[in-house]
Length: 100
Image (tube, rainbow, N blue to C red; front, side, top):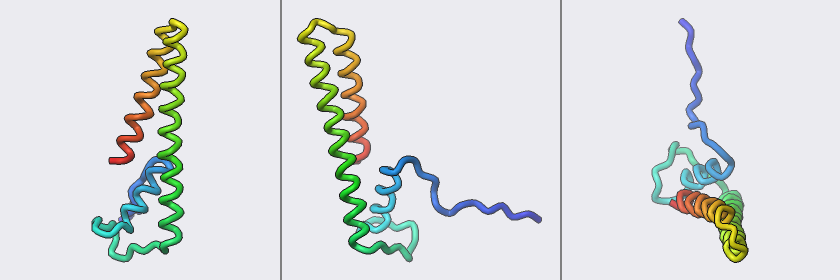
């Protein structure tokens, strides 16, 4: 009989998703994946700082897209403005999903 080894760790997406999963694992009041979960405080702080940087980047991308949309509106370029507004909306929605 052949046994198939399946990973016990869930497969996650990008680095941001992985860092959020790690922080959720060690956050008091959350149900951990394992009872043996532990991460030194300096690593928890490093992960939080890295995520704060990605949150700031998402806000900056949304701001840039909205600024560019306003520029296109001022020039009478409605299709380009609409495209930039959709891009800003995508950045805003992504940052909202991550925060949740």
